[in-house]
Every structure is written in structure tokens, then in C-alpha cells.
Amino acid sequence: MRLILAAALAVCLSLLSVDPGRAAETLPNLPSLAGDAHRSVAGWTGDLVQSNALGHELPWLLELMARVSKVLDQAIDFVAAHLPFSSSKAEPAVAVVSEPAPAVPALTVEQVEASLVAETNAARESAGLPPLQLDATLTLLARQRSQDMIDRDYFSHTDPETGASMVGPYCIVPLNVKFCGENIAGATSLSDAQANVVNRWMASDGHRENVLRPQFGRIGIGIAEGGRWGAIVTQLFAP
Figure (cartoon, rainbow, N blue to C red):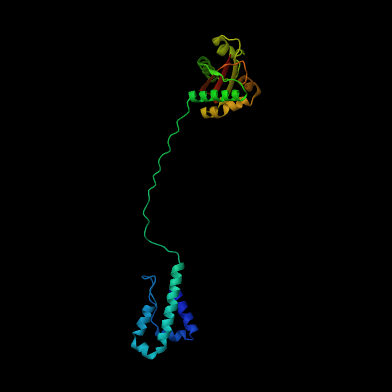
């Protein structure tokens, strides 16, 4: 800021054809701006006016300093208006407290089973077929069937030891019916099973045929968690 004041003073002196060296001999030092960011130059101009020696020897200086005072005041105002404002006053700290998000209830096997039954019936209704009736016995058998595949670490419609169809012991014989249908699927989790299993079945010709078979009237879906897949889903159909 002091450099600005000195430069402005030199410019004013040159414009008024005043020798800067001569003026420097008679002008007092510029006041320090460290304690006052904006002190009017008129303050030290007034000091000159009160000096009898200067007022007597240099009457031309009074008019000069009045002009310089006005110019420098305008310069200081301009600089102060365009310099970034900084404040040493600390802003009060604001504590932000966030509420914990409500816990999302974990899916249960029963919820996913019910969801898959509803999706299966929606697919049948879209094809103009009546919905299947949920059968408690078929649901229990389907759960046992899924658990057997996890316990013996296999994934197939046939017994890994005998090669016989698993539909007989898990549907035809217990229900004493002539035929049954079975769809199975692996899933990484219950959420994966809920979101994708029926779509996978409907994308496969053989599985879709079971879902849309008109001869079926009952359904049971059973899920067991564990094993290498994460979960296994068995869907059983009966007349």
C-alpha cells in the first residue's frame, strides 16, 4: 500500500510539473498504514497546513497537497474495494449430526418363497392360465429337496449315487399322484433368488414349460441356504 501511495504521489507531482526531489525535502514521511488500513491523506496534509515554516516558504504546496490528498484518497478507496477481504475472526464451528439410516430388514426364506410363487402365477396369468394354488406339503418337500442338494453337494434332477429321478421321492410318492414337475436354481443369496430366479426359469424352454403347463394346479417352492452356491431353490408342481 505504501508503494501505491508513493507512486501516486510521484505521478501527481509530475503532472503538476513539480520536482519530486524538491517536494521530498519539504514533505513529511508518509504515515504507516499497518495500524490503520485507510487513513485519509488529508490528515497529514493538515499537518502541513499547520506548519508556519512550510506555509510561509512554500505557499504553492498547499494547493498541491490538496490535489494530491484527493487523488490518493480515491486511490486508497479503489484499492480497498478491490482487495479480497480477510477477517481474523473465526467462524463459529457448526456441528453436523446425521441420523443413522434406518436398518433394512433382512429378507427371510419365507418372504422370498412367497415372492417367487407370486411371480410364477403372474407369468401363468400373462399366458392366460389360472394361478397355481400354494400347497403346504409341496413347500415342505421342496425345502427338503433343496437341503438334500446342499448336504450332499450336488445340483441335479437325478440322484448323484443311483441316477434315479428325484421327482419320485420328493413329489409323486408323497402326494400319491401320477406325475409332477420340478425346477431348480442356484442363487448367490436370498436377494438374488428373489430378483432373478423366475426370470431365469422363464428364459429356459424346459423350465418355462413346467411353469406354463396347464395340467398343473398346485405349487410349492422351497429354499435352503448354504453350500457352494449360497442358496438353492426348488420349485415343485403337482396336478
